[in-house]
Length: 488
Image (tube, rainbow, N blue to C red):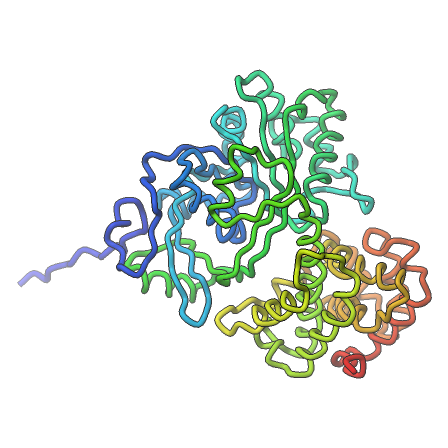
């Protein structure tokens, strides 16, 4: 008898066709996807965007079906390959004691800029597009230490010479705006959603600098760049998450994402008045004082995060929750937040003690596996705004900085360990940092001096302050663990 060969079963994929077959506990889009149209172009659709802005726009689409997203990857084609077969759908798991799972349907198309630049420009020119949003990380803004556009940056120079095939956000936006200037609706709101202080003004100034450099200042005459602040802890996607999503959905999702339930988007002046109610009904905070929220988040949450990352890694911890389970380290970080960072803030609309308590609870959430190694990425870009700015303020106020410098010293020790172990570093200054780390001798004065000579990170005035130098050397010497005497 001839054996029968059964056909290999191909797993069903998440898509519009399978959306109706999902289990009842899966939250679905509250609108008809076929009735939506692209009104948002987003550059940099990584996990954070898909957990954050895409989530908010998913909420808005029920009220305004013209706010679907065209997601533009600046380099990798991975997102398009993952989401195109899924009609742009993906699952979002909110990590709490009882995790919820929902389907996000706000991404209508996924484009890869180098693969199809004209499709990207076509979207930027489309008069139906009202918003451009960005999550491209701090380093992609190509700024000098003074916050100005670095016209000598290789990618910026490339875009100035070859505007039809850009690499930077400035190249894409200014060329797109130049083409759009002939549109019946040239105005555009551009929202930076990256962790840059005063991000709207920085972005606007850099776009103007680029436009002047290509002798086309009129290209940016019709844009608004409101300040924003974004917040939600978003761990990376891994195989365990993919398996969990498949189990809960009953279909395969090539790129699910996860985050804590807490999510915050604050937008300042410049949001089109006609859209304000739609944004607010979706949970966005619209305020004239974004800086208050921004300073509190960058200094308290992000500053503490970086300190936890570098000190936690030195102690052998793997995740934020593990680091917070270390009672001495958790007490150290809490003391730093309450006694050292909080006094540098002037935010009358925020209850800082309650805000700190909420942050600590978020850090300790055992349902979130936020890897310290991920937080440690791009330290040269993060430390100036997360810790060094606070240290400068504390010094100006005559306050103790011994706890504040521990995260900076731990970063120095991290670079030294990685370099001398032959390991890599994810950082735009990686080659320079690895060379420096290999040259370190483990002696505090010599090693700290080497790092303080990095003018791209440490402003000269701060680097020469003897109070900072002494505190850093003391912390660096004690980095077999944080010097917990500072918690008293």
